[in-house]
Length: 348
Image 1: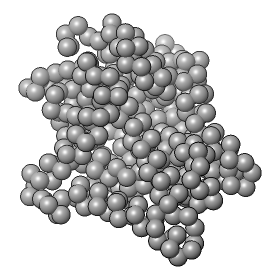
Image 2 (image 1 turned 180 degrees about the vertical axis):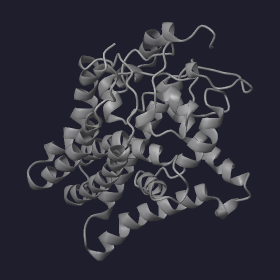
Image 3 (image 1 turned 90 degrees about the vertical axis):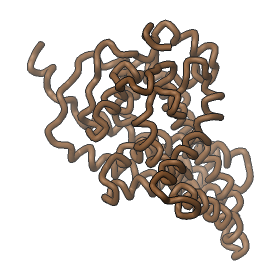
C-alpha cells in the first residue's frame, strides 16, 4: 500500500452535501419569481438523481486515517445549519405567495428532503456535543424547525442505550416493514423522551418533551391565523406547508433509523458490538450525509465527531447506499427479499 493511499481523505468531498439545501433555496426563490416547477428540484435530486449517484459512484474501498484538524468539518456543520434556516425561510416565502396548491406540497417535499439530508443530520451530530454549547443550541433550533424537538433526548438517552433491542422503538425488527415501523417508532420515540424526563422528576408541564410539543403547536396555530388576521400574507398555506415539510423530514429520518438496525438484535444484557448496525461505504451517501453511514463506529464511540468515524470489516453491509435504498424500502417484501441473506446468522 502506498503512502498516498494512507493520507486522509480530502475534506472538500463533504461539500457535496451542501448541494441539496442550495438547490432547495434556489427552487423556492425561482418558484416565486419564475415558475412553480422549480420547487421540484430538491425532489428530483434526492429521490431521482441521488439513488443513481449512490450506485454509479460506488463504494470507498480503502479506509483512510482521520484528519488531524476538524476545523473544516466544524465550519461545514454550521454551514448546513445556517443554509437550512434559509431553506425554511425561502419556503415560507414561496408558500405565502403560492397558497393552497399542489405546488405547495411539492415545495414542501423538496425543502423537507433537504431538511432530512442536511438539517437533521447536522442536528444529530451537534446533539452529541456538550449541553448548552453553541453547537448543541443550534441543534435545538434545527429540530424545532422540523417540529421534532424531542429527538436529541430520545436518541442520546434511549436509542444509544438500548439500540438493537426490543426496548428501543428506533430499532426495527426483522418482521417490520418501513410503513409499520413509521407507525410505531414516531409515537414510541416521543413517549420514550417523555419517560427520560419523567425519571428525572420533570413531569407534567415541566417535562421538556411536552413543553416542546405545546410550543410547536402554538407556533403553528399562530402562523396559520395571525398573519392572515393582520392582512400580511396567507398564514394557513405557510402553516400547512411547514407541517408537510416537517412530516417528510421526520419520515426520512425514521427511514434512516429503519435501515441502520433492521433485523439486527441483541439481548438486553448483551453488549453492543459492531455487527448490530448496518453500514455502507457508498460514496455519495457518505460524503453528503456526514459519514452517517459508518453507524457501527458511531454507536461504539458516540462522542467521536463524524470525520473520525471508522469503517469496520465483516459487519452487516447494506446492499445499496442510503439514497438507493429508499425505493426498495418502500416495498417491504422487496426490501426483505433483497436484504435477508445479509443478516448475520446469529441474529433473529
